[in-house]
Image (tube, rainbow, N blue to C red; front, side):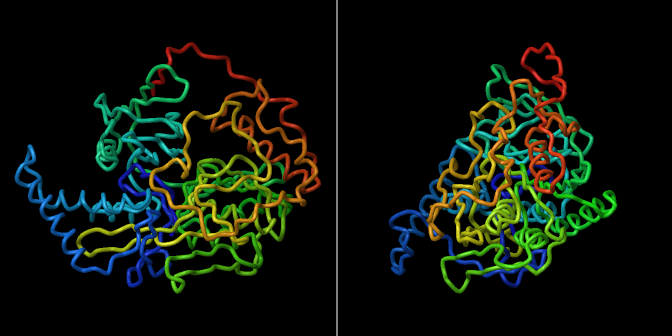
Length: 482
């Protein structure tokens, strides 16, 4: 299974990580894997065989536990103390390992089904602050204009700075149709932004489709249990709309936090006829695995462009890397998140589960994208502004090293279409601000359509020659209200 870093805001508090499930426990997606022990990057990481030393350290733990129980300023339950200790032990390994209580584990399983309650925000804690990784398409958080990189500093007027992520998520949950006010800090905005939202049950439309002349467009929002089925359904709809005469395809993986590993393999195999899709290498060689394509391409080799950005992570990076290494598609956008590790979910009946990093994954050419991400074949920025907040794996604490893969520097592709040389790397100064319901304001999409049209031998007009009209600037006091 695969998800991305951060917590999903809703009925489930789930990290978006690369995940597998312990043998003997069904993951709901038919994917089983043997978990290996987590690999540490510290010099003295070798496991001790000195049992006396282990008992001495456990005695130290018990001593500290007794001190807290006896002298902490307020009474604390043993369950809370042990839960905090487990979280500290696992989160100290890397950003993606953690302990889940039974409720957190149940919530995660609900979210994997693609329906949960909340605001539709994927969150992450960094240096004690709650940061937005990405909003989910069409959710209250998305419609309110919350952006990747925003920091949530207060909920209903009460500060959450320094609050543990799980506690912050609980404050943001609530019954559907109830109001909540978030206070945000945003890059280059001098004052905090106040946004009022209405909670609702989140139904994730994992695949959306649109037809632009003869070019099909498929957007994957995340990789859950229904993604491959919805992808095929969306593609067949596009074929019918085009009268069986599709000229090319744009696959949009921007801000896709990832999801299930088996779904990433199936989606990749929908476009790649043969060869490796992805491999994983665990601490023990016997636990390493490889997945190959199934021998079909649903598009019958139509020209293809994939859109990626810094919010594309985990499963979406597996798909992007496979399509790039096989030269099956041209990647357009900006560098991806860079999460190249796999986590195993190991249920502990009646006591939640452990989420443990057990392997790294590698693209078909043997690349590890851990903390590096995938570089697009054609760089096209969303806006002319450089983000002040980084949203990538390399910025997190205790990350795994990039090791064990093909270290040869990738050579520039020689099979790119001629039009690649004239694609601008950013919008012109007069390009309008992106609006979700106006695809002609999406600069990366417009350039992607231009490239795939050229690959298909269709007219490929320059979208900057007649940009959409710029909306008049509204008077503002630097606050956004909804």
